[in-house]
Image (cartoon, rainbow, N blue to C red; front, side):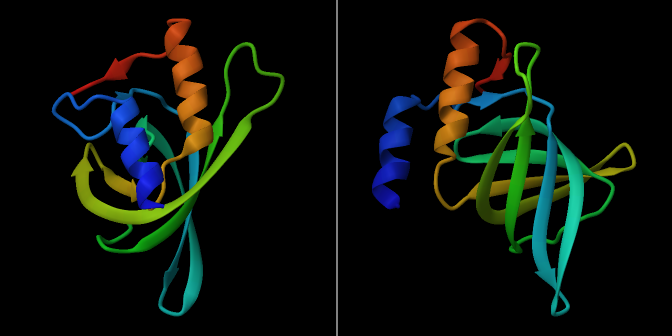
Length: 131
């Protein structure tokens, strides 16, 4: 697992952050344990990298909570959405304009996402936020 993260870091040079971020808004479903029960929260990504994502939601998930997530990627050329899954931990929680912003750090790089972002960046379809 650590070797895959290190390889991914080498593929995306550091520019103030560990991974290159892309300003992409896609639906995200997040699952986590709370009070002995599994919970599910829906949100929209604000930015995505192979090492994590920032999600906007009306429901907060506390810091240090382990989560699994599914991002539904779609584009104008896609016949149907591509669902990318990952696991990680909420590392930051904040509020903005009546919603919650949650930063999720992935346990492993989101490899399929890496391919999607690279292909779309080469075509100029994604905006990225290196800072």
